[in-house]
Length: 359
Length: 255
Image 1: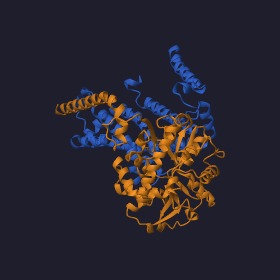
Image 2: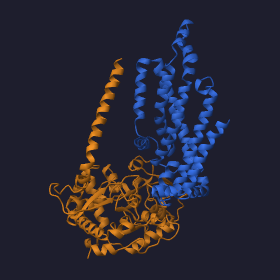
Image 3: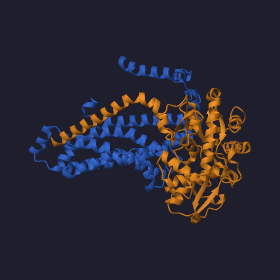
Image 4: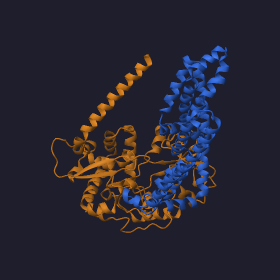
């Protein structure tokens, strides 16, 4: 009897909670329409003054809100998008959110993705176009503990090597094949999760790591640079380009001016962020507290090295280096991501809007 | 007889019509999709045909993991139900803990299992085991304890010992529930195995194939894995149904 009454109580409470929630949600739509965008992104703006005619725009990130995308968060918090008359919404990514599909389906207007991945989608017939190249270098590393003794690609033979797959494996394929290692027979490639536990627990010998994220996780877990061996894709000559901006042909045809304004504001955001990564890390942390402030700042510093490598003019952030794109495309074709050479012309990649924005 | 034919014919016709509409692009029109987003059936079949050996191998990996995990999980669940029946006072607590385990999402469980097991197969079995425990424990417990009133009286009237009651009364009485649990667990174990492969330290299995190919825009390949996964699920379900028919012939549901 006692139990039954308890159960009833729980049920009643559940009912009340759900009633409350539905009451909230039914009253919500009217207010969210106007408030959602300004609430989520442009915290700096005071919501009281009614803005002039603002163009709504959505950007889909490739991954969780983190300093990897600090330029956009910086531009949003400093009001650069507002200055250009853009009401920006920044959509975070996740393990099964695929920017190419989000943008193609119209969930977002602009997307951030890796060039190699975009090339694959383009080759399958998706009408997507690269419009800016944010990262000038590859951030992909293959890290291993020093005691494992992996100092050159040849040392990977007979080892267990981690990759995230899903399109992130091709630099590793290229690294292996360029060094005459058969990825089927000479070693074991396994899927890595999004932690670094597998390498910390010695379940795998070498792990994929981005300079700005997973390598930092290893350092935060108590290892030092001296404890780790690193194979850098840039040094091994198998670098593929990563974060770029892309749009659909259909959308850009109608929103050329809007996109140029967006790009101008974003470049400004990136310039500020790269000039002061500490502040950028703080801005990203304020927008989303999913990881610690220290990690966001660490990441911001590493990202700055990719967006503005040594000797790179910050005014040119977003510049599309066609030689690097060509190398990415060549590697993608040579190592099996693409079944035929990538088409690199105005239909798939264009610097037009970048030039317009940096004029 | 006529009815039986009709019962098979209608769903079959409906299925064929649906596939035909899909193939001819009407489904794409309704859903506003392009063929490179949702491949047509013929393309999926062709892709599957071209990659059959690999797909079957991956299917074997997933199914064997799901099966072993389901068996271990069901066995543990059953044991807990038995303990809860024999020692009702504290055994029932075990049931509650198991149910709490069941509430854990597979996406959270899979990375955790990676900490304890270093191979993809062991991780998969670990995840499936936990997922399958609760359904069996709860069902078996209810089967072991929901006895017809007079049957217990009868056992008492002949002064049957506890063990005899258990063997002759409780155990047969719980068989239909055990099969219900198995049927739930078949579906659950395959789902759990596939999702665990999303996070596994391995590149084998249907789950990895679905995730990896859909991410890489290899839609036809991804879909052929989905087809294999659902075929495997149906197949195992049928096996369990046949088994049930033979084991509990006496039960009302089978007459």
